[in-house]
Image 1: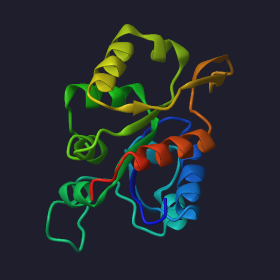
Image 2 (image 1 turned 180 degrees about the vertical axis):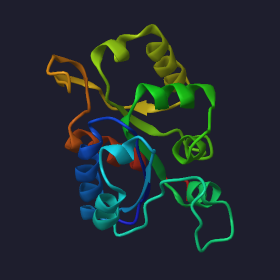
Image 3 (image 1 turned 120 degrees about the horizontal axis):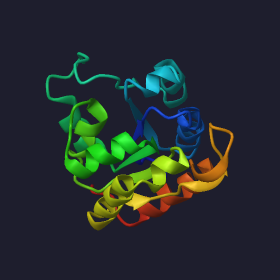
Image 4 (image 1 turned 180 degrees about the horizontal axis):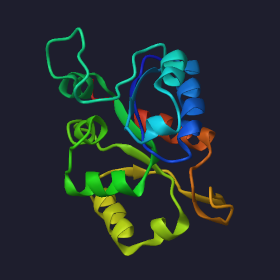
Length: 184
């Protein structure tokens, strides 16, 4: 992974705290990581956590000013070897499946040219909902790779399918995706 450019999208799931471990693992393995957080994700984990681990600015808004002149979502899409969304909520899956781009992460997801790697995390009832399952089928047909979810203890206390995959399993999937060829 040395030298890989990874965009890591973090959405508003209780599993967002695990994205910090994922960021640490990616940087440990030599990747450059730019984290994009949804507004909801910021309610679970502070951007400073990711800035510290990635040693790069965190993108939290479509409207944040940068030193760069060009559109941030276009520049980062061209920079990235891979977009990883972990955790990915039902809301994000629906946005991506339907081309909705109303925040920086969803905008980025339809700007990158390589299909993203997605690690869902949500309540089991949400995951099994027919609309969510149809969105997943749509995204798979478009080439998106999914890691999990897995069965385990959910935020509700119930043990069921919907838990974010282990960080090591997500790292392995990222390495595999990068081997299939970087865009550069």
